Image (cartoon, rainbow, N blue to C red):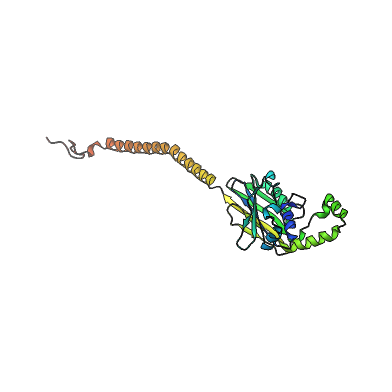
Length: 278
């Protein structure tokens, strides 16, 4: 039975299976949604040799690799899937409500001796946009078995006359040769990015994205439009009053001209400079 330890679920599972000199391929996907929630999914595929070795003597892979402790820790464990080439795939998934929870979930997989090192995920909101970042490293050269850090296990091995340092070195060599790990980061507004170091190498994780809050941008645009409209409505009566005053002034000036020149009007009885008839 695979139990949680200082080296995490992923490495514990790999250690159990590499004893048969098999290969273990693990893909860890961190998917973040717009609101900062999401899922961490681990897909582990073991080759056909591992499946055959686990089922020697009539047993089944599902019985030999039991993960009954995982649901209590919030993980969803899907049944093993048998592939046409004889390999088998196991999928584990755990949700989170905030990006702050991601490093802790990865540590459950990784433990103190796994390849996922110093991960950090952030979500920062401004008025018009939200920025997401993911940093860390995958260091396959930093993998350890964790045997020396388990006093109870060391005592049991020594009680049976087993060379703890020798078995630790042998397991570490097999683990480093057999285990391959890739990390897929899916941030809002960005295509999925895959980080996969070569055996014994390190891959730095550094990806970010920014998502514009179109709702807020639209609201600000609408508010600006309403403000302009309000200003136009407020100023329009004043413009009409000033226009009316100017028209009345022009009318008064016209009437004054007519009043001052009465003899110029048609039909006048007298003409300036001509004496009346006798």
